[in-house]
Length: 267
Image (cartoon, rainbow, N blue to C red; front, side, top):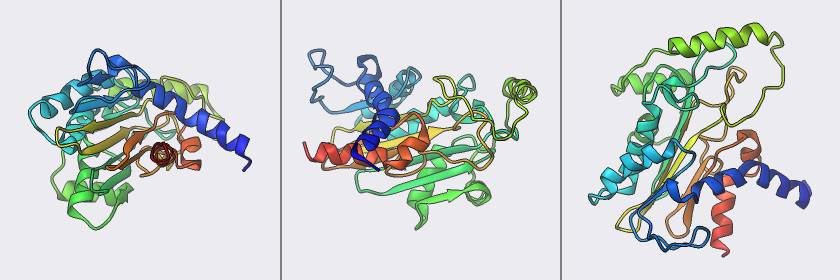
């Protein structure tokens, strides 16, 4: 790949992510005098993607503001979004794949470089918490599909029946209008809004999380960047963290979040 093509992939996959992360209304714990583009926030701080991240930040702040850890905060924050059944790109209210199945992806990473992820998980309310359990209770990093669901059920995670009726109705309408199984899917603001969250606690430690229902009406079996450490999320406690939203395939191709953190390392 030429340098120009690599830059194009980087721009297409990640610029929206970085812009979202620095919106003042998406940041809690910052000084009013902090510059929008060049800031050193007071600790603690939490940032996340998209407008639905504002409520998630407020949930995370309940922990950070009371001396909680960044890890607990980023889990609690995005759990709030996973519970919002009006959100069509995260959690159990998300849009399904082309076969009508809502499959969820999530990952989490802490200041010790520990990480956990789940992908293609169906029928479980909080994939981010299952991802954390993978990190803390197994020697693995990622579980997928039926194995991820069996693990979640074994550890007592809450089940949730999907798709919800509003989403099922939308899917039936979409199915009637799209007969070609391999038709190129549309990408827009409404069908790929992952939530990614990063936090620094009062101890100076960084953690991050990412959770999504993925590309609306994706091919069955598709997994995007969100649960992939280094693509959808990466944290280095000595440098910083990054999380991504956008076209997952483009982000995966350049290990987007890891690339951002490495550029941060280089100054």
